Length: 109
Ligand SMILES: [Zn+2]
Image (cartoon, rainbow, N blue to C red; front, side):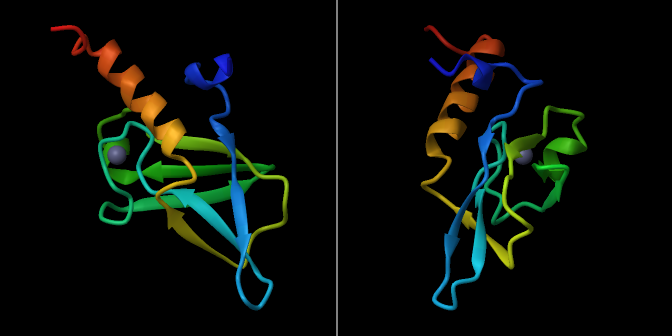
């Protein structure tokens, strides 16, 4: 289906938002890094939004030179704040993890 999700150079999806009780936008960031190795609440990460794209980079993976950042399309103005979301990006993270495992030849057995 979403073939482009499997292509590392493509966008991974869309940045999603929720609104808090004061109607301010809160960006929801993936709770796991792109490779599924780290929980971003525990590891350091950097989120940057520019040119309609949000990059959420896992600093631990970045030092490995791995494909370390999510690319999420962002169509709204910069949000007031951001928080990590466990559920929103589960499917993306799962896909990424499965792909990383199969690329590493750890599947089968
Ligand atoms: Zn990581």
